[in-house]
Image (cartoon, rainbow, N blue to C red; front, side, top):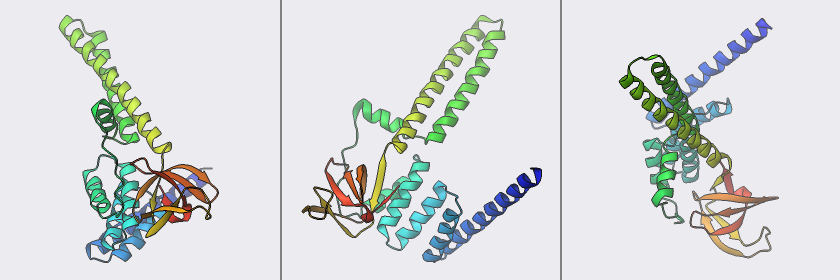
Length: 248
């Protein structure tokens, strides 16, 4: 058993070292303007089972340099899922989305709902999870000081601080599960065809109502055989052959 665990450790160590080498080779190729070579190295890292916001971000940048709009937007979206508060990812995604032909953007949420949505998006699911752990630790620390202190002023300060941190820990947990729910319950895709027909029914006999183009983001709300029913950010719905898109 020990030999097996040691062997698994060596294999993991070898794969990690290989991925780091491939990632650095990709970065070097990108800096030298060899974007296709950079993509090849980054995708080898993906094929080895490793993912990260930095990897997706670098892939997106490489595809953008090659004017592959759909792939760049796809990987920017993947990077944003892992690191929703990264300004570089958000900015580059916005630049790429400005090149998309279809203008289907929705109005930004306002009022209390908008504040809630923006607050939840500050960190990823893991980020809010760590925040909850840190706040819980601070709560426990202050509560212990409060419990053993003999001075009234210190007890009041420690008790107030501990209540604040347990409240923040509770809010962080709510935000973490909200982020998790947003990712797991939402099925999104990017259109990869230069022009994809949208139909009223999931059949080729249905007439084409309009077209969507490369790079457009859609929310999948139903699947039927080789078809998907989707909704655009502006609320418009339709059916499309799933071979026209790539899910994320």
